[in-house]
Length: 194
Length: 181
Image 1 (cartoon, each protein chain N blue to C red):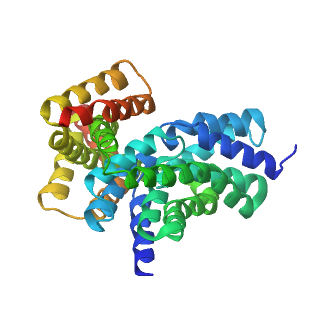
Image 2: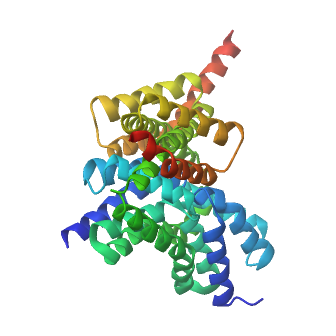
Image 3: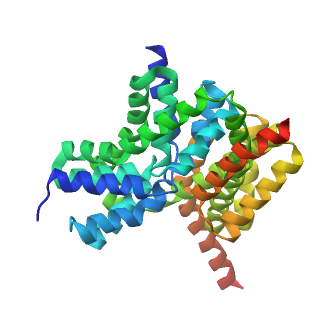
């Protein structure tokens, strides 16, 4: 097994520049590099790490890159892997976005910026729908919509800082399944009584 | 110096609260970048999202790099990216053994689930703001037609968002300037 830095950097640059659509869409590419191409780990281990990484906050791609680097080459490997994964696209982003900022007053660029706004609105709407349907799937229709209304009132009507809203929801999340089990048990007992 | 500390704090907060990968942090980053620190306007932010989505790679690090660079140059970009990724990457490596036991725990699952409705609402508010701005800059007819076409293209026909964004850029560059005259 050749765990060289060259392999690590090559794998991370590839996954960094071939993945479209943000971190979560790149996971199959990471799996391919780590399991099929370089045999750094078995498929099971990759699945485990992915599940763990999802339980933590923050961007997913860099967590996985950091772990793969750490697994093959220790702490320095983690740093190298993350840098290789994000540097090319970060530089491209700064260069392109700066170019557009400079040319902002040109009518062509102005038109480009205006025309892309509705597309971004649709993309954001689609993401809102995805997050919303995850919530409804996990919480049920009634409770899911109750959380939407509570979140909306807290965020937009009062308004409370989003960090505080998220921390409140996280705090309830820690006991959510316990409460649900208790309620279900009550129901079962009631049914048995009947 | 103060701006570097703000950059660090802004991106640290936005990403440590986003569960479910980079996209879930977008409304949180919007809150810090546009609403709280006024580093970018609403339209700048949308513009950056368009570019970020047209380019490959993780979305939150691209946003961090660009905003950090805008606020305080290369140094700002580095600080913003570190604030975005370091806490969660270090946590994953450190907690791997501890978390292995708790992965199936109902506490972790419950937390991940309960963040979803908040992110959904924040995303919805962002959608509304972008929609309002696009009607403002294109007029209702053009904005709604472009939105409808991109909805069909991305969601019904499953055309890749990067392609839709590039087509919108081309249309905007070639057609929109002449309509305004």
